[in-house]
Amino acid sequence: SQQGEEDPQALSIQEGENATMNCSYKTSINNLQWYRQNSGRGLVHLILIRSNEREKHSGRLRVTLDTSKKSSSLLITASRAADTASYFCATEARETSGSRLTFGEGTQLTVNP
Amino acid sequence: SQTIHQWPATLVQPVGSPLSLECTVEGTSNPNLYWYRQAAGRGLQLLFYSVGIGQISSEVPQNLSASRPQDRQFILSSKKLLLSDSGFYLCAWSRGDGYTFGSGTRLTVV
Image 1 (tube, rainbow over the protein chains, first blue to last red):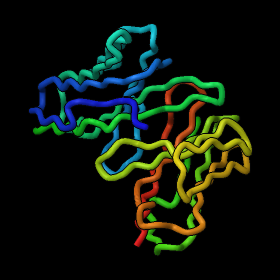
Image 2 (cartoon, chains in turn green, yellow; image 1 turned 120 degrees about the vertical axis):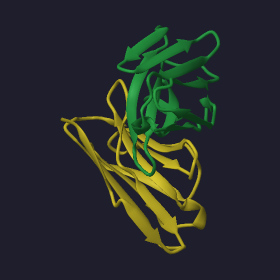
Image 3 (spheres, rainbow over the protein chains, first blue to last red; image 1 turned 90 degrees about the horizontal axis):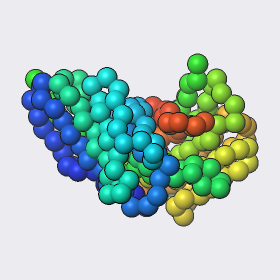
Image 4 (cartoon, rainbow over the protein chains, first blue to last red; image 1 turned 180 degrees about the vertical axis):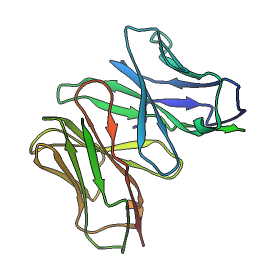
């Protein structure tokens, strides 16, 4: 079953604006990850934040994690047309038989030039 | 460096035909391997994962099966495809932090 739920489902902004996508989940996790997918392509790992971390930065990306609310946000600053893609959050809960990554339904981001 | 290969990129198969999708990983040993399926405009659904040779865990009951004959080889199979098996199939591996995905196979069952 899908644990992560992103909102909004779709987001359209102008180049230069910031884009914020949110993710909520239901069970305990070891970490939460964000991935990007260009249309018809594989997923690319963007950033991982552990359950004991609250905020993480990578270039123009900023991820926050609130384990009390079971939610995360991905902020892309100064967006570019090339940022147009689908963004997925995924939660990882380590189990006795190996870790499993559970994905949300994704947010389709369109950055207009 | 670690790489993951998945093929073919696209496949059109008739209903009732068999399926074999192959995924191989290079540059690492004893990875966890995964098969995901993605319906159009949707998130990824975990189908199978493997923590070692011959060890397969199935997440969703269906007419698909997976095998891991070698440490860095993961195969997705079906004896008879259904129309509902159409989708985008992604192989992935992990050995710790973050997953690396293959480029995917778009399967259309006609």
